[in-house]
Image 1 (tube, one colour):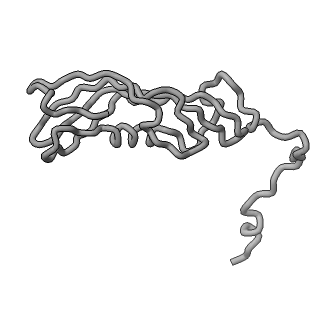
Image 2 (image 1 turned 90 degrees about the vertical axis):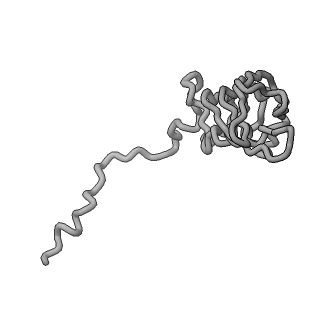
Image 3 (image 1 turned 90 degrees about the horizontal axis):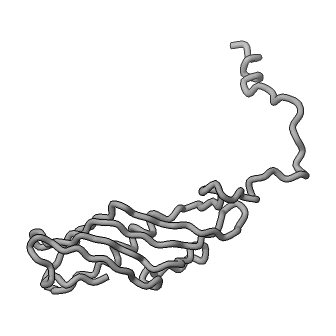
Length: 148
């Protein structure tokens, strides 16, 4: 997403739109973008820099770490904010800042049951696992027998 600094009035400007999926440039097969990156930002100029604040969102197809099934996951950042030095350029690219916030909002260990709509099949105990019937021995039992 590129902003032309000469088109920003002194009071700032509101920009809305969508960038294509490929702008995120993710190489993770466990997190596949499924919707364009949508944004609603207020941009302005201040002392040699451009600031942007607002809301960004997109959607992904993630893979559950427990059952390995894929599920839909929406990323919404309601309080996006960044400031970028302008330099001598008339154009500022916010793509890297947008991508960084989206990637940081993705879960490191996604679970398909977070929404509560689908139970994760990987969380149920297996039938072949033995059930413990006797209580565990106290951890400090050996130390209690020590005579110092």
